[in-house]
Length: 248
Length: 248
DNA sequence: TCTGTCCATTGACTGACGTCAAGTATAGCA
DNA sequence: TGCTATACTTGACGTCAGTCAATGGACAGA
View 1 (tube, rainbow over the protein chains, first blue to last red):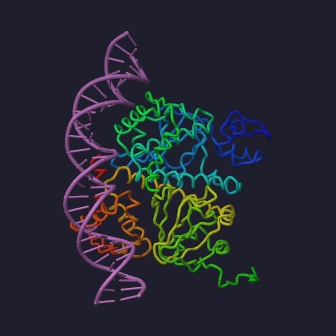
View 2: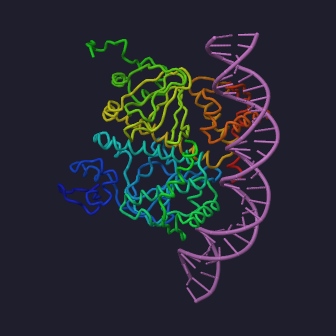
């Protein structure tokens, strides 16, 4: 590495988490201003993938975690039989690959849902750094823990809820995540196809389609293709809680 | 704490991971002999819970992770509506509470399925220690990552597989976990009730019951209450893969 | 030994969602 | 601009597993 860079001089190749608009969502949020450049030292920024391209798949040796910088990513497990289970959708600021830290190869396949840029964190260096920055280590634990919780929530959704409840929950989840990224909470464009939604929620595409139109007829949403407008958020929340209400 | 203990003298209260038979499954497996006592310094060993007792629930402030020493533990999420989703079963050597590291309170409820003893690792001290022992940190990442994968597998099972496939998968999972603990892989006693199995697998109790008897009639297993004998492991494996085969 | 409680099993019926099939919109591309 | 592939929608029908209901064991306590 011929990187004879002067103190604090920013090389064109060097990442600038300092200037990244996602620094309050992504790993930098756990790091003090002073230490931020230590993260910048290890990250490889700005790799770009076109729609449909794989960032990694289950045959790729595990090397790095990736933060989504722009665009969005779908992760899925593909079995020997070719059967696919979508395990998550990742938006800017979210970290992909945490499920792969226990093996030699990635535990899932990550695919760009649109033109997407990601920042790569080589795992060895990241672990080294988290060993030195307790706050960052703590944040990694938090992220992984959150991922476990998300997955448990998904399991719950899959095993207990109806098609309508699942889809309402997904729409609300997306809404809140868009909102945290300073985008409209009620008016957004789904990054994924109906097929991916169906697979993720354990439904048939046809069922997803039907529920969308049912919601539309009820005036809860307006949907044309991937463009979605939530017209009645409370109604959606009602749908997700309907089940709980019956029981209580 | 009047613990004026002499150098290296073992207090009766002090844990002895050194002597624990699970040291090759539990956290100690990631620690060199020399450093083991640093783990022993922070662990509170040997708390005992009777069948049905809560180790913690969702209203308990998050403080520690727990390693199962003997017995077994069930974790579940309970919604406002009182609805329950079992998220996992934990056997000796396994770590409970990893899903709770992102909040103030535990993210689930942990209940002893039988008379169970656990070792408590206060999270603050554990994080401090993992900051100092890279191998231990690495192992924590591995464990959490594995937990994410397990949960993804569960999601897959719930969304794609039939009742028979789910139950076969659970039996095989238990079998391999018993086996790793030097117990019979084909002859064991289920620590959980049919109800828990049903909830975990997203089925009704009646369905679980029916599948058990169906398997029994087919000569694949022998089951009387919680006592189970796997008569034909290959057949069980066939059942779990049947789905994949159709597709391929 | 009796009794209550909990757990497991079995049967009959029902319904939500999957499958199959056809048709319609949309997007990418020459 | 038109072509093709892909994505989405809609309808008809079948099925797996849920629900309801009854019964059978196992175990604890009186």
